[in-house]
Amino acid sequence: MTTNFLGSTLFGQAPRLWLPASAFMLIATPVHAAVRKADEARIAGCIHDAAAGRPWLEKTLWGLRDQEAGWIGAEVRNTNGTYDLGPLQINSWWVPKIAQLMGRSGPEVRNWLRFDACFNVEAARWIFLAALRDTGDFWRAVGVYHSPTAWRQRRYSLSVAKRMQQRFGKD
Image (cartoon, rainbow, N blue to C red; front, side, top):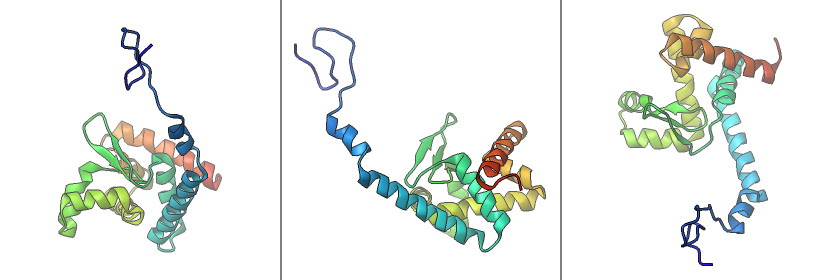
């Protein structure tokens, strides 16, 4: 029986996904695990530095990080056509605003948000602290980080609170 590159037969059977065994081995290699561990250590250092000695802010950034669960290089498409970028999943909606504030190009800022962990964490800190300044309410600012919609803010804040409690305990 002859198959094409997708693994389906040339005689009309349903297509099957075909990947070489080496593709699965690559996913499970110790090198991949070591890179992931190094990336997580880098993100942790960026969070620590961005908090600038303020434990409440470091815990907040960890709560956002745990909720968003992005990674260095992430570009996740949303249903509204925007993308969530990097470790703290900064929405691409922010790219023009950050680019304008920095006097840099949009593509440059987008690239930094995806691939520079510390730039991504600093952007998350800036978004959260701006929301905190504007609202005067910690949990509302956490929600604003996620969405301009009130019911989504409330749901997101509750989820971040649970993640912070899992990481740091009830205190």
